[in-house]
Picture 1 (tube, rainbow, N blue to C red):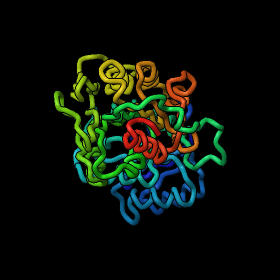
Picture 2: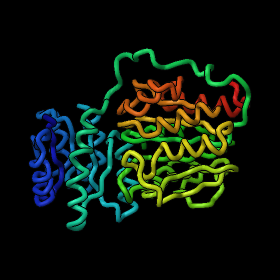
Picture 3: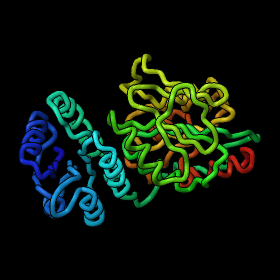
Picture 4: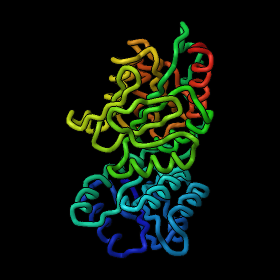
Amino acid sequence: MIGVVLVDDSPSVRAVLRRIFSKTRDIRVVGEAVDGAQAVQMVIDLQPQVVVMDLQMPVLDGYAATEQIMAVRPTPIVVLTSRANRNQMQTAFEAMRRGALEVLPKPEDTPSWQQLAESLPETVRTVAMAQTAPRLARRGRAVRPEILVDSPRELRWVAIGASTGGPAAIRELLEEVPADPPVGFLIVQHIASGFELGFADWLNKEFPFDVRLAQDGEELRRGMVRLAPGGSHLRLETGGVLRLDSQTPARRGHRPSVDEMFLSCAESCPGQVAGVLLTGMGSDGVIGLLALRKAGGITLVQDEASCVVFGMPRVALEKKAADVALPPRALAQTLIRLWEKGGQP
């Protein structure tokens, strides 16, 4: 049974959330808080598996409450916030930097509540399995990056795929990248529809790079970071041209799909691409990463100790889609060595 604490100053919102979880067999609401201060105390007293929390609240807001919860008793947190306000979306990602794992839209009409009723229980189940504190020891999966390259090559693009825990991992990786990198980055992040713009705004504010949602037909140049918009697969063509595809069906329930991005890299320019698969549930990206590796591309994954959910990287290692598993900062340092030395660490 997954115990959940609901945190929202609106009694009606908490009532609807209660009804959503009452229809599940494996999730139980163990407490309700009207502000962030109450939430922190309930986490200490009730020790829930997951916290579902609003951001705009009296006494202590969700941003500060997230920080305190992660300090006193790290617990998976799902943030509910409006996607109509770009400033609130940026705040949501700042909460993720402080430890929240997922962000979902706060419903504003009946259809939105119906969508949340479908997505929220599955999100809670996913984050309940999350790793909220570092493991005491790794399991020997990290491998020296020197095995990456057997001959020099020109690295021009870095393709990154991520799911649960991805925004914080992507930020951590980009923190290590110099201000004028000789590569462009394309990113597929599984995220609730409508929050892609907030994610791009947040990264753009945090870093000196040109961070935006990708546009069909634009060329991915050095120093650019492009994110897949909701509802479209993101592909890389020869010469660095980006293509958006909203017609091809979702792959494993995802559009954009990490597999579609990696497969396009394998087909168009594998010798010039590094594929990086970060934290997340499931196996999206594994087939594409394996194809990229077989085509001569560089492939890396996030290691178990630093992953929130060691799902996608674990399957990639099992399928031999990558041999190198490192924390986000070490992944960035490895990439820097590759492009600084023409592909030879």
